[in-house]
Length: 106
Image 1 (cartoon, rainbow, N blue to C red):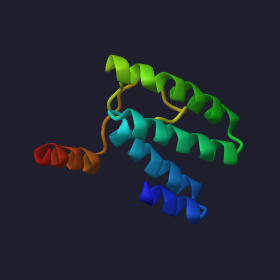
Image 2 (image 1 turned 90 degrees about the vertical axis):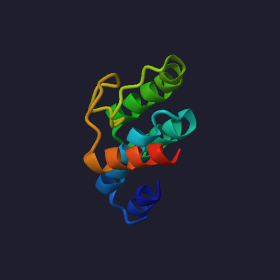
Image 3 (image 1 turned 180 degrees about the vertical axis):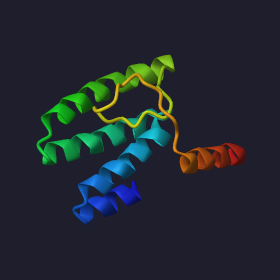
């Protein structure tokens, strides 16, 4: 979230989206951070007046708790409304490596 916040402060929405998508990928298994990533996405969408993204984020905020309860979260999904909320996606190699390293520590 630090890189996302830096991008927002710099006024670079494209970079902010990029970092939020990555935050979404790693936060999906954890309901609070997962919802926070969608909340931040909703904030950018509102600021940019991207109403289709606003609607998409509202749907995802509604669905995230159900996905967490059922364990049916699409691994690697970036969380934006330009992709299916149900489609698994490849995890970027650098994030996959970080996740593997975290699993070794935990």
